[in-house]
Length: 454
Ligand code: 5GP
Ligand code: SF4
Ligand code: MG
Image (cartoon, rainbow, N blue to C red; front, top):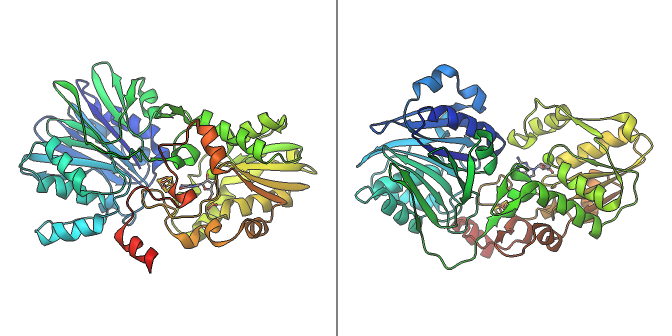
C-alpha cells in the first residue's frame, strides 16, 4: 500500500493528496481514499479502483479542510472489497479519527478477538481496523500516548498516517519495515511512503522517518517522539528489489542505483555469453542496464510493454494473471531473431512471467534464452505486507534450481546471491530478508509459529 499525509496551511490539501497518491499508485491499485479535516470534523471519500478513477474534480472540491491523509491499497489481508478501502474513519472519545496503514500486523487475530470480547465492533476484514479500535480503546490518552500504547500491543509491519480533527501523525514501526518519509512544501509538512510523492508535488525532502518514530504535525509545526527499541531495523529488502519506484530514495539508498548495482553484481557472479541483454519491463530495466554495462553487451528493449495494463500481480486470480502477461508484453522480433538473449528480471515469484517470456522469445526466433534474476530466489512467505504469502505458490520453495530452469524452459537460469544483493545495496545490516533467507526477525503470526513446530 501507499500512504500520504499533509498538514496545511494550504487550502487545497485534498488535491495535493490526490497528486501524492497518484505518484504512489504503483504501491496499490485496488482502492484509493482521501480523508480531510477542517479542524471540526473529518470527511472521507474512498472506493475501489485507481486514484484517477475514484476521484473527480467535484469530489475533490467537496473535500475541504486544511489537513488530509490518503491511501492506495494493495490487498494482503482482507478481501478486495469497498468496505476494506482506507483511510478508515471512526468516532472515538475525542472526536473523529482517520487511519491509513501500509504493512501487515501479525497478531491482528488475537487483538481482534480481545477487542471484540470488550465490545469493539468491526466493519471490515482488514488488520488495519484493529489499529483504529486500539486507538479508540486508549481514547482517554492524548493521541500520541494512545499510539505509543498501541505500538506495545501490535506486532508486525506498519507505516501509518493518522489524522484527528486537529493533527496529522506519522508512525513507522520499530523495525522500519515499510518506508515512510517527511517532506515540506512551503509551510506544509508532508508524510509519504516514498520520496517520489514529494517530487511530484515539488516538495522538499526533509528526512526519512526513523524506525519506531511518531511524528505529530499541527499548528505548532512538527514534533517527534521515539518508541524505544533495542533491535536493529528490518527494512523490507524487496522494496529495493521490486516494490518501490526507481526514482525514490529509501533510507539513503536510491532505488534505481541499487537495482542497477544488482545487475552489475549479477554479471560478476554469472557472466553469460550472449549477443544482447533485454529487460522484462518495467521492473527488470535497471537490473538489465547494470548487467549489460558490466558485461559490455548491447542493451536492447526487446520486449514491448502495453502501458495500459497494470501490474500482473495485482489481479488476484491465477487464470487472470496468465492472460495478463500476454496482454502486457510482446517481443520485438527483429531484435531477437537468431540471437543469444539474456533476459533480466528483478525477481521470480511463481515463475509465471518468466515461463511466458522464454516461450515468447523462442517462438519469435531467439537462438538461446538465458534468464538472469537480479535477486535471490523467493523461498519463504512474507507476513509483512507483500503478497507472496502462500508458500505453495513460490516456485523456488517447491523446486530446485534445475527444475525451475526446466519449468521455465530457459537455456540457463541464474539468481543473484544474498551477498551480491548486500554489495549492491552497500550494506548488510538493517534489512528484512525473510522471504529470501528464511530468517524472520519480525514476529510472525502465532498460527504460523505453531505450524512450524509441528
Ligand atoms: P512471477 O510471474 O514469477 O510470479 O512474478 C515475477 C514478476 O512479478 C516479476 O516480473 C516481478 O517484477 C513481479 N513481482 C515480484 N514480486 C512481486 C510482488 O510482491 N508483488 C507484485 N505485484 N509483483 C511482484
Ligand atoms: Fe520484504 Fe521479504 Fe521481508 Fe516481506 S519477507 S518484508 S517481502 S523482505
Ligand atoms: Mg516485473
